[in-house]
Length: 269
Image (cartoon, rainbow, N blue to C red; front, side, top):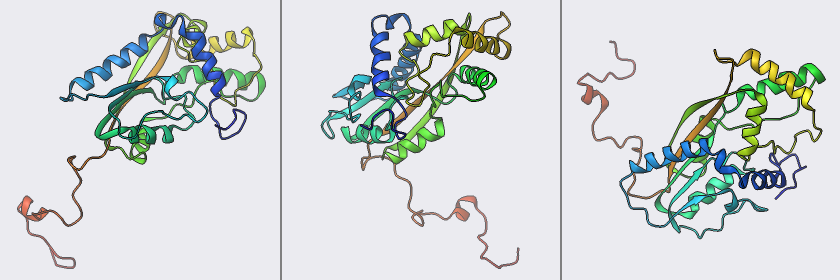
C-alpha cells in the first residue's frame, strides 16, 4: 500500500486502525446506526427467497492490510454482506472487484455504507469556522461517496443488476462535543491522510459549535446530525439472469405494439 503521506492515499491506514482499536471495547454503546443499517440488510435479504449456503459478513479486519486485499478464494462464496465499513477504503473500486470475484456465479453482494449527505452540518461548521479564523481549511470530515458514484462503481466492478438506494437518518445531539464524542465511540475519528496534525484547541470547536447551533438547531435547541446510509445490491453475473435485449432483437415492432402506423423518414404526416 502507498504510504499515508503519498497524495494518492486518501485515508491513513495506521490512524484508521488506531481509531477502530480505541473504539472496540465500548463499541456496543455507540452501535445504534450499525444496528439500524444491519436490520435493513436483513430485511432486504428476507425478500430474496434463496438458501445462499457459503456466506461472509465483511468486517474492517478483512481488508485492513497493506494492500486492502481479501483472502477469499475465487468464486467461493454465495453471499457477501458489509455494514458501514466501506467508506474509509482507499481503493474502493478495487475492493468491489475483489468482492465480485469472490462470489460464485449468481452470488449476491449486499451492503450498507455512509453516503454523501453524512455529517454535512458538521463539515460546514468546521470548514466555515476554520476559514473565518485562519483563512483556510483542512479536511476534517470524510469525503463520502454518493448514490450515483456507488451505482457507477458497482457497474465498473462487473456486478450485474445493481440496485442503489439510501435513507437519511437524523440524530439529535445536545451539542457538537457530544456529537464528536459519539463519532469517536463509533471509530469514526478523522483518518484523512491530508488532515492537519495540529490540535486546533477547544476554543476552535466551541466557535464551530456556535456556528452549528446557529444554522442546524431543532426547535428544542438541540443540534441535528444527518447520516445518509446507502444500500447496495449487486449480483455476480450468471447466464440465468435477466439480460437486456440486443438492438434489433425485438420480435414485435413498437408501432405494432402501439397500434400506430410507422412513418418512414421524409414521409409527409
